[in-house]
Image (tube, rainbow, N blue to C red; front, side, top):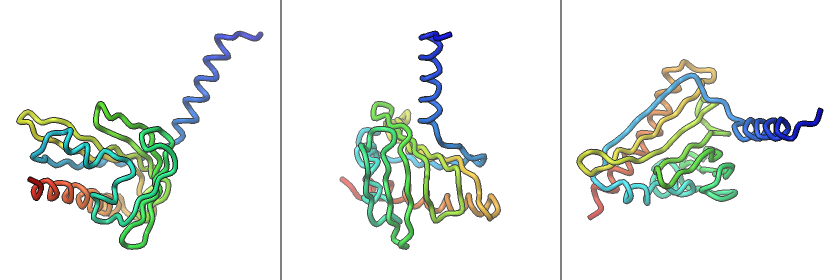
Length: 168
């Protein structure tokens, strides 16, 4: 039997499954830093999905295919080590000052990596910048993969904090 409601529900389910075509890893990791600026100011600096090269010390260049505020956009980060990362935007919410992406290619020993970068207000008017990820380690101990990813994330958070310490 041809039931339009059932067909519409099945189509919606298939679209949902196709757009969620990423797997989250089993290892959870999160780092945050408090920055002495308003969230809107920090978001203006880090909220552009294709501007990581402006604030992350390990990124030499960033190129984008698609719209950097629409799921499906792909950014390619050229690292100063000549490595390359390719990441796909999964969700972008300027109102909530956060975006989530999955890593498609990485020099790190990880797979199934889904990361979220967000900024939020603290009680004293500062900003809490959080960078979290879930991932699986590939051919290395989980602690080693976590340490490598932590070094990369800490480098970015540290550069953002230093930028605002120097800024008037």
